[in-house]
Amino acid sequence: MDDADAVPVAELLDERRHLLEVTYWMLGDSREAENVVGESYRRWYGLSDAERGRITAPRYWLTKTAGGICLGLLARPRRGVTGRRDRTSERSTEPPDVGAQAVLAEEVSRVLLNALDSLSPAERAAFVLNDVFGMASDTVADIVGRPEPECAELADRARRSLRMQRSRSTPPDEQDLLARTVRQACVDEDAELLESLLCPDATAFFDGGGKVRALSRPVHGSRQVAHSLLTLLARHPRTTLTTHSVNGRTGLVVRYDRQVAAVISLDIAEHHVAQVWVVLNPDKLRSWNQPPTIPDSGSHGGPSRQGDGSL
Image (cartoon, rainbow, N blue to C red; front, side):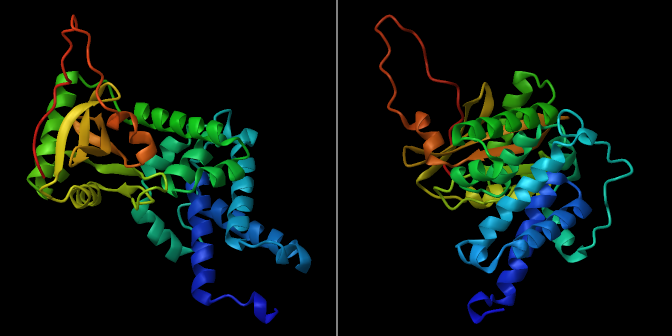
């Protein structure tokens, strides 16, 4: 190895852990993830010195290579037309890399992984790379091999599918009451109440779009989700939290001064919040920050019903 190729051990281990995390989320099987990472490194060392020298970002090259291998595995017939496969006998529950898996176990819900199995390979890849790892849209498009707008649509379809799986038909009154109770628990900074409103395996997703310093990975577990929400919504005299219609159901809107800073959707299952979707991406909040249109003189429309409260 040339001195120019020397890499600090911490960077090497961080790179390998990153690859294991990406491949595990994409495949849901730790042994397959380990094999894919090994194959990615084999392909790296299969390059000539000159070819490796032209790669300015090895970690990106390895991630793209691993992602492509995962997409190939997900598309295999044994997984079925949607990318799902029978894992009753094949799924590895005792991974070779116990240390890395211990970290993953804290972040990955088995319920969520099973739900990801219902997505198409492209949907799963777009969702995992965008929502789980917060990769830039051009990076996601490069790994998935689709144009950026198509990848954005794939991720949106994946989100809708996951919401439908976790959310049962909830009466509007129940949705409204639970959303208002969640808002009050956040306003009061009541961690115990907020945690009690969440499913034990609740998951929170934070979409910063690379434009704000949001959490780049999902938060799993009622206690962790409650903590992350209370941290995000920490009391401040210029911040308000209100209930508002979000995607046709009661959700939460966070304003800093009069600017919408975040929109929160709540998916309910069995009378508790199963998934929390926090949009912080300024690009996706533009429509929320448009000046209100002045209604015609004959219009009697009113504003959406919303709670009122400062944090």
